[in-house]
Image 1: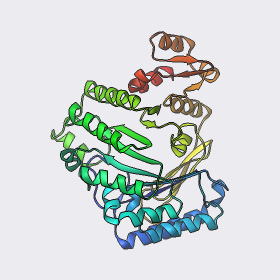
Image 2 (image 1 turned 135 degrees about the vertical axis):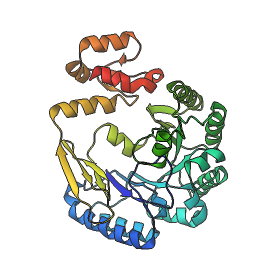
Image 3 (image 1 turned 90 degrees about the horizontal axis):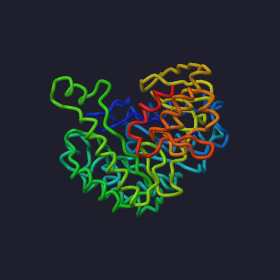
Image 4 (image 1 turned 90 degrees about the vertical axis):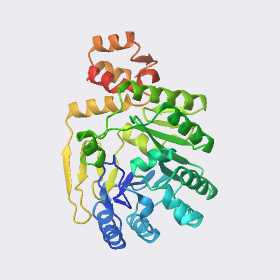
Length: 358
């Protein structure tokens, strides 16, 4: 598994806490040189035949095709080239509309077989409030362009849990996304953290976070409508048509090793983690080892985010039996065969459940 962070945007969303810089031609060239050098430098850490490649951001779709091609050639020369089982590219709808069908066809020629579109909302007032570059019409147009290019695995991102998002607008957004028919939907509750515009608005009293009741109602509506449409709720924030569960993200939840390249990217070796510093050039790598206890907690926490759950023997060996029995009696845990899992109607409070176990 290889993840490449593209830390560029044309503008910044008010809630974003990821490392990113305003894109210019000069910085993309410098970035590409750094990535290619890092590929050569860290080649031994990568699988010879990686199953997945993921370009995330930031906004990978602002990266010129020439830069993307050079990065892929560097991976090939280092012995880690495609074809990949899953090659995901995150895109902004406005970039797809501006660059058109030839751009997406070029991505497909380069090996991209899964595209994740950052739609977030299909309400123009909310999109403007978020400082997104696209509007609802272009979000739908971008989806149709990607589909016309022959991409048969499309994921869309949505956001809920906003105090200025009504249930009516939220339901309309879900219905319109379902009409598009993506193979995968990732949906995240808005959290205010870091040093961004929304955090400052919250601090200044210009924004009030949505209540837990509002967030729960929006999450429950999402779960019900997607279940009725035939989507599998295979992870707390992720839904897919059968057979389209994200392979790359699934690796994170099952603690498969991966290498993260680029500024601010994280990596996992199986026994330790590492991360690059958040700077465009000359970024440094910091490593840390995980204790046995860290590994146990992480295994439990990540597995219980998924519908598959965690091995029963592992949980019973590492958690208090009284806590397990109490949560099962309350319906917050379910044992099926040799696995424990959190039922979907308790996914929303999974953090609390996991805290009680660890």
